Image (cartoon, rainbow, N blue to C red; front, side, top):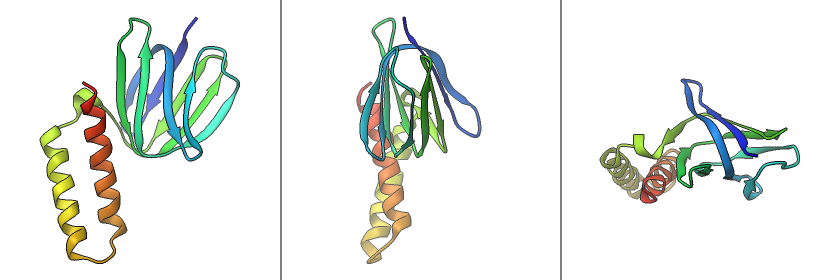
Length: 130
């Protein structure tokens, strides 16, 4: 038995398929879902979602907030922004990280720059596992 996974953003269906395990980070911490998991709803935080597929491979996806719902061996992840690791432009992520760090260095407090740093770090973490 496996889980049916659907990960969607406002623009598109980012991933759908069957998996043995999915690990996501919620506002309460990291949680894993396997077949027959009890119903669950949680707020996703910006992080890397890992999906263990039936063929033994792992799909890594950078997500930037949203929520997860689990019910009847179905996991729905609804995300503001989600990117498959293989679709992430590494050089662009590194440039964004450097620019955000420079912006933060010139300002004493910038929540926008801090958020940009975190998004770039999540993108780079996603591709690090490839």
